Amino acid sequence: MNVVPADFVIPEPPSFVFGPVTMRLAPLGEEHCASDFAAWTNSSAHIRSTPGFPWHGWPPDDGTFTIEENLADMRMHAEHFAARVGFTWTVLVDHEDVGPQVVGCVYVYPDADPAYDAYVRSWVTEEFGALDVQLREAVVDWLARDWPFQAGRYDSIN
Image (cartoon, rainbow, N blue to C red; front, side, top):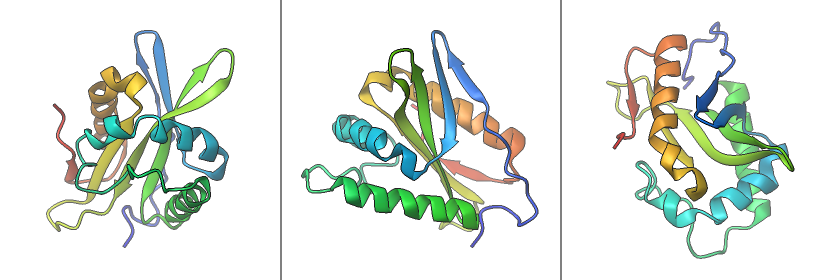
C-alpha cells in the first residue's frame, strides 16, 4: 500500500535550524550504515525511551544486532522509499571536522488504523535528545504543509 499517490512529487526536505544546530534529512541509504549503526547503538536506551519505540522492540538491547543486519535494514527502507510504501530519512548534522553524522531517523509509513493516512515516528541520539521534540514538531509541520495527508498519526510530543 503506497503512503502517497503515484503522481505525488516527493518534496525536498527543509533544513531544520535549532539555535547553533542545523539538522537535515536525507533518504536513508547504505552510505549511512556505519554512522547510523554507531548512532543508535550508542543511544539505544535513550531511543527506547522515545515515544513510538518502547513497544516496537527496536533498538535491540542485547548487542546481537550486527552491522550486516543494519545494512539489510537500510536496504529494506531504501526499497520502501523507492516503491513509495514507506519513507525513512536519516537525520544528519554536519560536523566541521568529520562531515555529516547520523543523529537520528524519521519514518513515515501507512497506519494500520484506517482513520489515518500515515504513521510517523522519529528518534535522535542521546547527544541531541534536547532537540527531540523540536525536530518532531518541525517534521510534523513539514508533512502537514507539503504532503497530501488528510490525517497523520504522530507519536506523542511531550
